[in-house]
Amino acid sequence: MKYEKISAEALQEQINANVNIRIFECLDSTNTSAKHYAEDGMPEGGLIIALSQTGGKGRMGRSFYSPENCGIYFSLILRPKIPPEDISLITPVAAVAVAKAFEDIAKKSPKIKWVNDIFVNGKKVCGILSEAAFNVDGRAEYVILGIGLNLLEPKGGYPEDIKNIAGSLFSENEDFSPNEILAAVVNNFFEFYKALKSKAVLEEYQKRMMLIGERINYTQNKIENSATVQGIDQKFRIILKNENGDLIHLSSGEVTIGSKRITV
Ligand code: BTN
Image 1 (cartoon, rainbow, N blue to C red):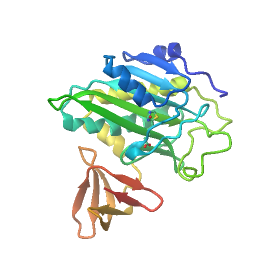
Image 2: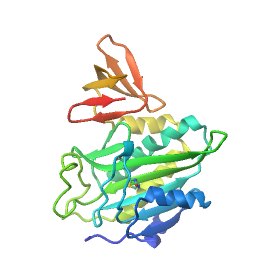
Image 3: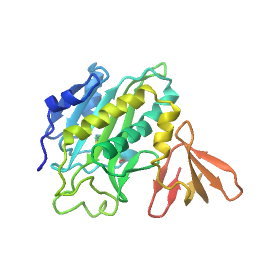
Image 4: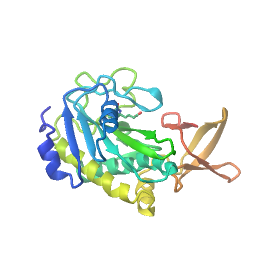
């Protein structure tokens, strides 16, 4: 890495929330590690960082490629005192936090692919995976917010299976500070997290959202349809308009940009 090393001191100085930082050269998965810390009672603000992961986890059971000298992989322990139905807002809000940091610090123009992937120049440069543990009374005991930032392209490029989709925020000849980027993501996140259901956060998301106004195909209950993307609603569901002019709100799923298709 030609940029400065991630350091707890530098981060502590720049993060204006109460965080408890643990940095590792390599972990299986920062989400798994953060879960152990949370189970052991670490309060909100636990920030587990790895410079590489051997078993980085992605959404829908996928893996997240996490080589050394390329990115930052981290998980934040949260103990939200919010209704269980609002827990799902944490990931899209984190997407806004990342996108804003990429704009303010890295001077890039990120786009959010619903629900929570960040794209720069048409390539995915960040993945977000939240995992929650619930009490018997149905409330969240803790949430692990895991974020993987692809900062630099691996030497020799990305593996064959992801090379068409994965990208990096910076090229080799750009200067940047990973501490500054990570601190900005965490600071932004805590700011938006305080106002999880605010109109402002929703607007911040929507103005960076990919595919707005575009016609896409989507599959619901195994039936294939096509519709135009309108935006998101207050629950961060995607709003589509079908050929009859009806509005459809889809609450989770996947948008594959290449084929412009959503599977719910
Ligand atoms: C996705 O794109 O499907 C989500 C990827 C999330 C990856 C991050 S990297 C840090 C944290 N630890 C993990 O094992 N996964 C998340």
